[in-house]
Amino acid sequence: MSSSIMQRTNITDSAIPDSVTPHPAVNWVWLAPFLLALAWFWANISAVKWLLSSFVEIPTLYKIVIGFLIVALVVRSIGNSVSAALEEDRPPGFSPNFVLRRYPLLLMLGAGICSIALQYIIDIKQVTVLLFILGTYGLCGLFVEQNFWQKNLPVAGLLACILPFNSQFNSGLGLPARVLTAQVVEQLLSMLHVGAISSYDIIVLENGIAHVDVPCSGIKTLLVGTLFLLAATWLEGRKLSLRWLAVGAANLLMLVSANVARVAVLVLVSEVFNQPNIAEIIHVPLGIVGLVCASFVTWLMLQGVPKFQPEKTSGISAKANSEILHNHPLAKPGIIAAVTVLAVIAQLSHVETSKMAIAPLRLPEYIKSESIPLNASEQKFFGNYPDTQTQKIRFVTGNLRGSMLTVASTSWQTYHAPELCFVASGIPVNRIEKKQLTPSVTARWLSLNNNQLSAVYWLQSAQLTTDNFLSRIGSDLTHKNHKWVLVSILFDSSLQAENHEVKEFAGNVYASVKQSLQGEMNENKTGI
Image (cartoon, rainbow, N blue to C red; front, top):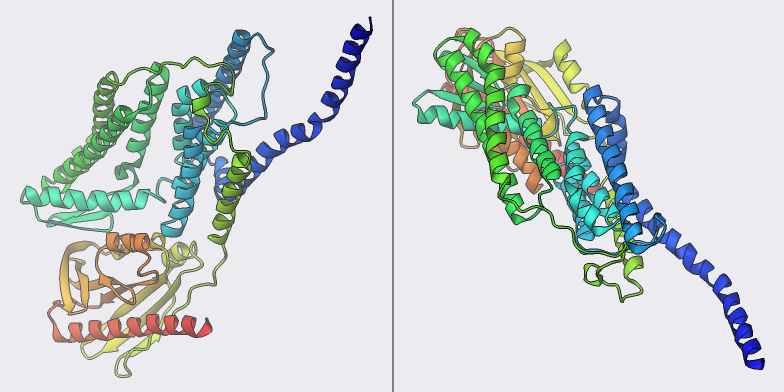
């Protein structure tokens, strides 16, 4: 009897601390994921703000697709949780305890690091938001079952593509895509012995000018083709692997090639064969045919990718080798600290900088000049970029008369081709040539208005001068030349680039711009 009493006493006594001691652990179980999520969203607060502000612009069709994907994820998550609970003979539910799994953790931290790096190098909001969505799905992978996370990774890719690229195709990646397309088409036409030169996103031929507009950038084609690949992968249950990545790379290559071929055909039909009406008719069908053909070939290649095979698991913490650092008590606090450091670095990258200003241009005294206001279209365009500094003057020197516009900025997105300004103002562009005006100035020389006017422009930094907009965009990747000035000069008469007065004037303008940029740099050094 006494032993029985002792047993009961021991059971009762041991039960008392069990009901008291778990409180600190329970608090940590809930506090740890809260701190991790808070640090992650803080690190990506700019992407969250951009996403929320652009959500109102999402078309209804995109909202329906997004809603369907989210509902599908929730339903499949609940179904997966219930089936796992039945296998383990336990009630279904959500566990706030997170597991440090290798692939979700790599996706989250990799997306965070890449996002911060891209913001320092070249800030394209759509790419930042795409990385944020993928990283957030990586964060979710620390809380849900491994099979569910791996199988539905293509859905995260669908959301990551739809949300950032639902609108604003003309910004971000659209501009570099159009410029690159124009240059590739120029090379293709040259191989066909068709004289052409590209500038910005236009192609000038002997018979006219072709504009690579927003629909021809290929961004929508890439988006739809990528969505098709991700949707097919998800619906067919294909496994994401190196073979799948090879299919994805081939898909992108086919989509880009199809778009370039379409633009080349349209330019040939419209400008070379002088059939603009036919080009207008086949514009959309060519794009659809290219997309359908590329998608069909991609689907055939996708059949060679093995299907996803679920691993046998037993709950969220199953398969010990899928968890990393599980024997280290400081692993989870260390991950939270690492994400917090990323958040601090991200906030430092968004510190407001003072408005860029360069010293006023000081042309030689013998060049008579006076300031003139920007026209309405120029004011509207540059008004969208308050950190851009513009200056427009009328000048007279010797036999040269005309106007000059300089645009100083630290962002490649604030520039657009002077040719487009001339065309929009009713001044046709007849010819574009690359000219070496001085040993330091490589520029684009334009013949306008049936060869009655001439113009020239170049892009200049403190160390480099170029006539190529891609070189200007590429400078942001290296950060070697951060401040640039676009110099655009319109002469009141037709001139030759070899004219002595033209060369001398271009040299004086180049020296004035260089002096202004170096003066601004010296002021910054003195201030430091």
